[in-house]
Image (cartoon, helix red, strand yellow):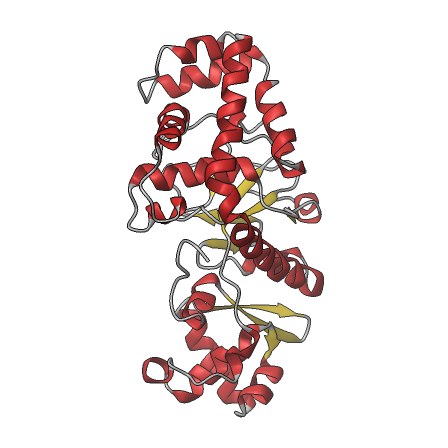
Length: 321
């Protein structure tokens, strides 16, 4: 993603979870049969109504490759009802084009032709299916979804307030790499997206797991959905370290002090080491992808990456809280 200076000033983190993105991405996990995917359904085999919903929505939301942009409109950030209204109000030409593109890669059932034609009963059926999936699958988990997304949002926006947007973009390493005016990610296909002064909406997601996800249509508001990182407990800096055998006592202490961003001087003071030692340990942790560092005038500020946060939490967080 290529930024201009105007794009930096217009880049922001979404204020709340996006229910339609969470529907699509949780559907992907269920289809892929991930080890803990059944936990999405409370550890139970899907009931018959749930199986019907999953079978109905799966053709529109394949786990691999393209799925239509119209399923995840920006309006969903104002709530599920607003999002579904936007889905059902998709211009017929656009819906037909996106379903045709989907059909190039996946076999579609006959009813999708009625959807492409804007047939009212089919549109209403899709709206009811999305509402039912949300009620049966997402709502029982929503407090955990919202909690993780909010923790991630506070972390990113806190860094943005203190150090600016470029400092915030560094917090995504190693998942995303910020270099001068380009934000790069490992992605299934090679793409270059030029923001062109529109800025970027970053959407933290509970169910996004492998790589960030972007819309295909570059005429739409640029969006990048990414895995929300696990919150780091405030008590991490004083907890008994299980990381010492792996990192060494001093380096583990340095990492644990970064439950909040710190300069090198603050790092040395809180970890009880010299300034030169703090700088050396920070360099090793940065090379390992556990922290990111950025210069702020005469100071260097260090922050945890999502990998570092997961390590402090004792490993990657489970799918459910």
